[in-house]
Length: 343
Image (cartoon, rainbow, N blue to C red; front, side, top):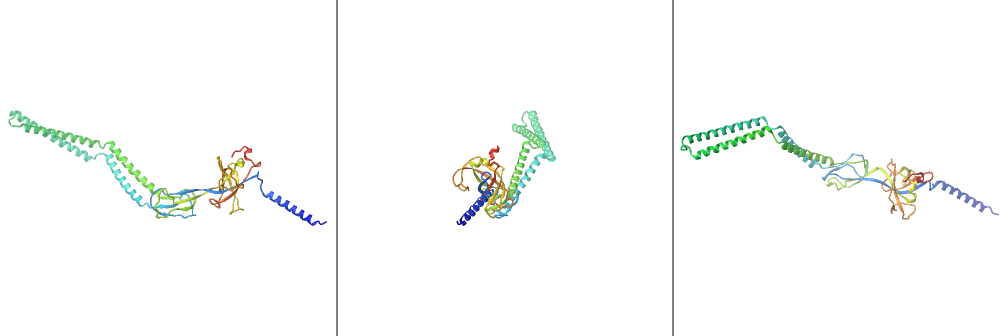
């Protein structure tokens, strides 16, 4: 009997058993590890100038890393600077007007008002004396030496002099009392309005400098020097390098096996032998149908939940949209819900 076929069959069976054992040892148990497929996602910022002036310069290009507070661009501020100078001049005028009202009347003005009162008193006294003289002559002559017209003229001159005296006294009182408090308040309000206008211009000048709000990488440069900027037109799009996460989807049957904070390992096609550490940061509370772009082992439509796995990417290897595989080590019994933990 030929034993060679039996020996060959035995060798093949042993090799197959060894290969199966090696594969079972290499392939993780589905109860001890959950594998998800998704894509790298990051936050982005669209930066625009707050003003509507012409762009004077832009400092960075696509791909340049930027730090928080770094100057990225500058508007032409010559018009704003001229308006600020005009506002400063208006403030100086308002300050002088307010100081004049707060100081009140000068001693020379008070002395002048007193002199005017004295002159008016003298005129009134003279007019009174002339009237009395005309009346005395008329009484002594029986009205023959003085006409009624002369008498009326003397009486009118006395009334005019009395009115002028009263006017001079009122003017002296105003000079001594000084400006009204309402006039001082109005001048103060005008000064504050001028200062507010200057503060607004200074703010606009400060806002004409575009700065990075956070550490990031320039993803797109959308405008160039000479373009007219506006708050509605972004100049740069920045990609925030931290945090980065994998947007994946977990089936409803596996939802109870994971929870926020669980450790995970991320593998990309560009670095399959260099996995990154991560953790589950967010699990959606709303179910949705499987998106067309999601990568799952079962290509069928089903209800899934979005999961965000935060990645520790110190080497900045991950890029927006990059496919990634997430491996999550489960609890000993393979079910987080059994331990009283809820996703």
